[in-house]
Length: 599
Image 1: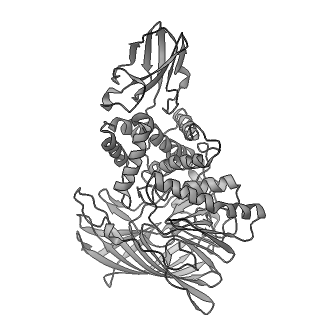
Image 2: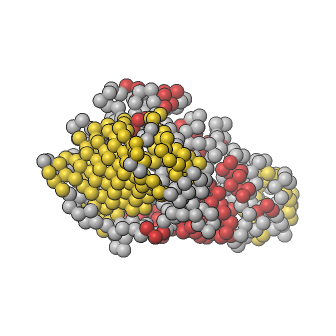
Image 3: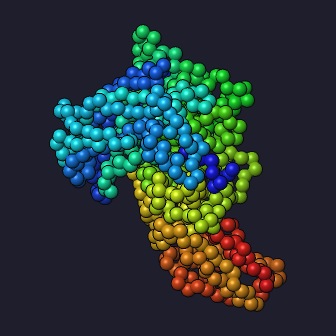
């Protein structure tokens, strides 16, 4: 999702489309694998009746839950995200008490009237036909089971619920600032994830999400003049009766379901050769400059889709939708909601970022509530490369903005480690700099450590091994180790689990002798450029001893540097004029003032 901070420089398928190809269920990670990995599975069937005048809707939900864990489950939990949009909620109080509140929220929730708030009220809940007790605690429904769910067992939950769509404040809601009627994300009772770490029934305070992989079957009844777009594939033609239509959608192998609707949506499509059908929904009353931007967007969105498919892994669904809605830009299953009154550069840039999220967090479904940098940072990394590929004047380092954001954070005195839960950052801007900038630098700098070609192989292998699963932070490092046969745990430990910084300097030059010093606590291998007094240059590579290997390089490889040694000296064959550490500036050295020395 897109945030505007100092660190960041600065479907439903369409109602006229037929059913899309269903993804095969045979590749679901639905049971314990040979490696011991398992993940839960849930199938949703929902019938929703929306009243577009009161912004209230009634829902019936049948949920079939498969316990693929080795554990007996005595309780289950649901997320009721719309309950956050009520005065006195945790999201409201956090916004009122954090030192730098988001201007999108500020004190707006505290001022909502009863007909403006959001809520999901569970009227009844049954387990295999028997009524069970439950209680709503803020944005979480706590459910006491009638009978425990044993390993390998399936259970069916039937729920009736009422809900109200809040005034659009954060990502989801009604009547956003651009007049889109319904931006429906995180709108249904959503089963919480359970994995080898236990339950993840986090309250919704304003940050991120985590969901269970499964299949969705949704029937939506809404006024017949509303155009609907979002997750999934339309099944046949809508059934129209008494001024309302019922749309039937299926979405295989997703962990979220989102839709948006407005009576004034224009709908455009762009069929990609050997690829998905792209959909674009935007308001017909936009000013001409914005309408022109939306008309221009499809062809370059297709280029972005191709870039990500080629550089990460093939997009596996038959459709993707870019929809005007929400409060900025936010990624969902097969779609994004994005505000539409933007310059073309902004519209394309945010589309690139949100589309890239299809890979980093949607298909590679990390727990973004705990590991927000894995989706925001990795997305920022690959979308920067994609946007650079579309430019006529390409940047030598398309990640330079992310490096600036991270270095500002590292030198600010306010940094918290990337292990910090997304809701536990002291400042919103610290969260954003960490998640977006430092997360992007994590990948870019990994390329400096292991070599760019090895990083490309790592990303593709990571996708192959962990798409449609829930990878954890160390999985990307272990993937890189398998590609390179290097030892890389030191990189993950220092850069992700601590706030240790990288600071290397050129201490002295004496004729043909160079002495370097390690000032920061974080170890790194060193790329070194030497200019001799005769005008010639030579590049050297100093391996990090604990890495147990050297990246592919054309530089002269010299002896290892053991981390505990604060200085490192070596001799060259000719008199030296100047020395520079990391001329590429792909190593996130927090003080480049000591990286260059002239004799």
